[in-house]
Image 1 (cartoon, rainbow, N blue to C red):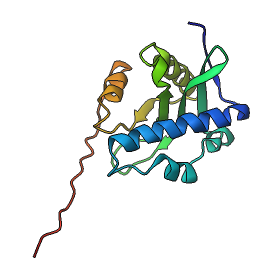
Image 2 (tube, rainbow, N blue to C red; image 1 turned 60 degrees about the horizontal axis):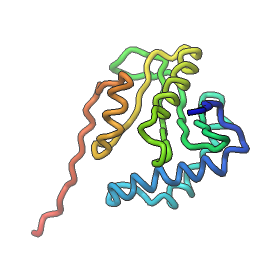
Image 3 (cartoon, helix red, strand yellow; image 1 turned 180 degrees about the vertical axis):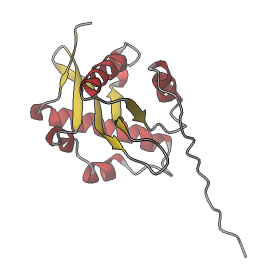
Length: 161
């Protein structure tokens, strides 16, 4: 496989927005009660923001001249009233086209963004994964990420009284 992992460019925006749409559509299809439609998200969130922000980064996986995946992230200092400050980063989106999944592309994207984050002095990487996305959870565990907080959710049901 002749895979190239490179920084995203403005010329990639159309393709990146298309893949971002697919990513959010997959989430909406899995949990339509919780996730907005991909169209609604696309109106509010544009990957171009990442290209313009010096604290953000986007890497593209390219195969035979075609973008087939991407990862976005940003870094900052985590300041909390209870934990010590730490230079941290979040992986905001990671997506690989379904036709080429399970071929090591996501690993290469993570490897590349982590290298850059390390160069920026980042000490911790965080990612938010919904519980229904067991394949993503397994992937991130394989990448060495582990749970550090349990963020629990409960719907309050209205009483019939």
